[in-house]
Image (cartoon, rainbow, N blue to C red; front, side):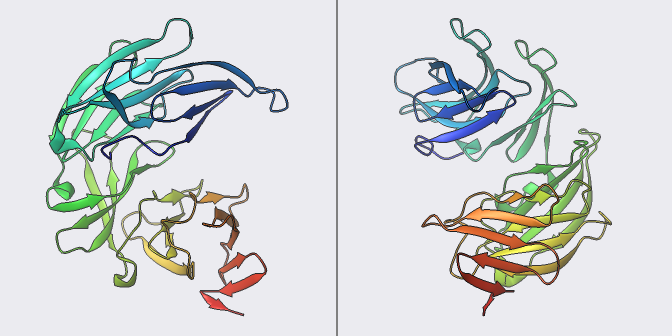
Length: 297
């Protein structure tokens, strides 16, 4: 979570709705018919309080809800609240918890299948949101992998929400990919730790992308895409590395997989369309130029 307002424009898609957010306003569009998109309304994610900033916005446990983290100007405290906008004329703001400045890098996640809300800081804080208007505190516990970290990337959960994947950068500035069994949140187990190659220690800020069968993962690093074999969660292995050449993770969009998961897509800093072949031999296509494992031909 960064101090100050978020990027100027952010887009969220929730089933039949598209949410467009800037620092002070959230617009809700009905996209049921893409040929006839309509504006349903808009509201302030902060609750229209003066001197309040949006720090981050997260997906909701169901349609017509979002989670927002806000801060008051001049304050070291952050507040997390669930916003229900099913009735645009009567927005409901439900406070969940307050975070201190020590938790300014907090990340929040909804697990819709399990109806849980997770906050990752140096601790893991868990709420049950079966009733989003009355979040119920479940537990707070220290996380061993997070005790000696400098930073950690966004967490990725398996489809069944029982396994979490996160890249942690320790005080030696080494990056490791942790696979964690989170089926029992009060008794989590580390399944494996994969050290990333030293040439890609700057792991960027993008989460691991998993294939639907969870057998492959794709991690956008400083200037590369790592392809990781997850067939055995206790011993993942790096299958290959695709160089992005002069493009860095700070300049590309989020990574998306094609429906058959044979191709990945990104966009470059000047509007280039990047197409990445995800079957060996890995290939990157940038406009009219063709790369094989980073070598231009």
